[in-house]
Length: 123
Image (cartoon, rainbow, N blue to C red; front, side, top):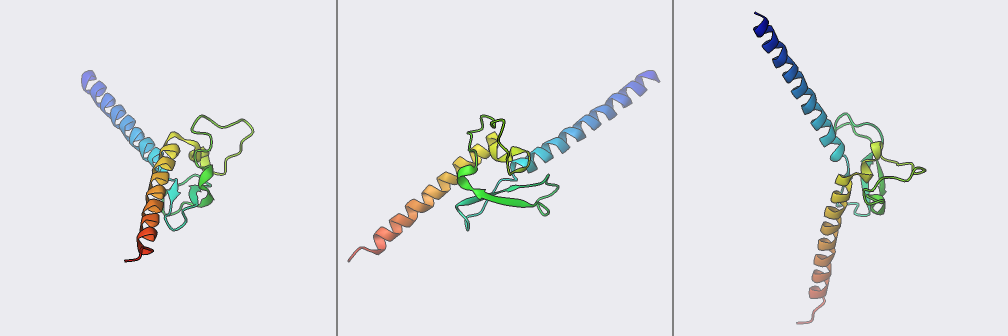
């Protein structure tokens, strides 16, 4: 009887820990994905100003793209006040996201330059 109680108790603890881990991963994933870039506004990115509870109810602020990963993910100065919730604009993910955005912007600029060059050619 004691062995069954221990096994049941251990199983419920494991289930609780697993559930908490899944919630934490889900929350962290939402925080990571809270950096938003829109191709229609290429000079800015958007980040949450409050703790996000869902993507549908997230209040965001636009900031210049130059402010994304401004300190290269190396931590913020003591006197720095971030405009984004939980400094998500300075995380390792934010720095990776900025690199991805810059590659997309550079590719789009190169494509536009190529098209402009070839539309101005005289045949």
